Length: 206
View 1 (cartoon, rainbow, N blue to C red):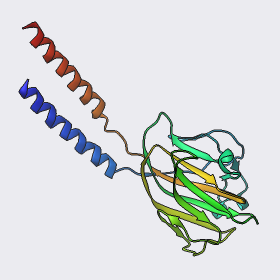
View 2 (view 1 turned 90 degrees about the horizontal axis):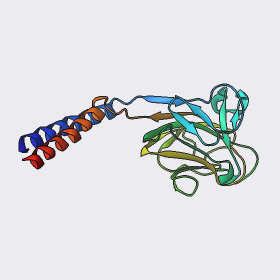
View 3 (view 1 turned 135 degrees about the horizontal axis):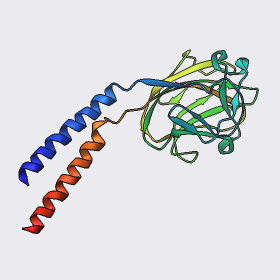
């Protein structure tokens, strides 16, 4: 039994090391919302959005992209993204534009849904508040201007883009990192559990 535990401990150490190595090699994927308009749920790659009001007018999207989503009217039109089937990811960038004549005009980036924690606040005539930076590095942020937010919001299960007040918030080219699980890890854990059960049965028989 002691030898098995030593072997198991060594195997777990190797698996953890492989997991960290996978984390270091995770690459950035960009969500661009296709080229059409529409509303409702949206799936792209590994991700799903519970609500995505898509705009397909290049003149109305950040950096004249062919499509984007817009969030208005508080929680009722917020858009929450998560991995299909669950899991964690990192948010590393997104393009945005705060449009219209309404003021104040504020975009919130949150974890934990619309009632969750606000990590980034982007508002017309104000400086960025929270995590990350924007390019161009305007202070204050200007309306009807395209920006790219970059930063690191890591190990989250969801990200919500939400309007706090009037105006239109357009978002596109969302950069995310997904840490792959080493292919050997599920098999290793199954083997360890099975080995422990086998040893317990042998001791019971004796």
